[in-house]
Length: 98
Image (cartoon, rainbow, N blue to C red; front, side, top):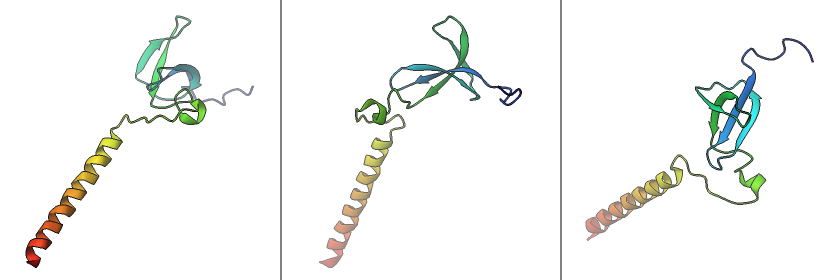
């Protein structure tokens, strides 16, 4: 292997999938603030990801909805507000037409 081709902060990092709970020990340069102990008893930097091959529907074959940021609720509230606004403006138009 060639010398000095990897960045200085290239080290083993634990990646933890927050959806499935699965953990992987992989070499990476990702910046982390937390550490945790791996199966071998050694402490490594810890990085949490929302989705990985352990929880992604393409790899698991299961269609699951991962809504960690509340995207579905925000969409529903926006559409409900738009419908209410549309209904209110339609009511005003009916009142003005009489």
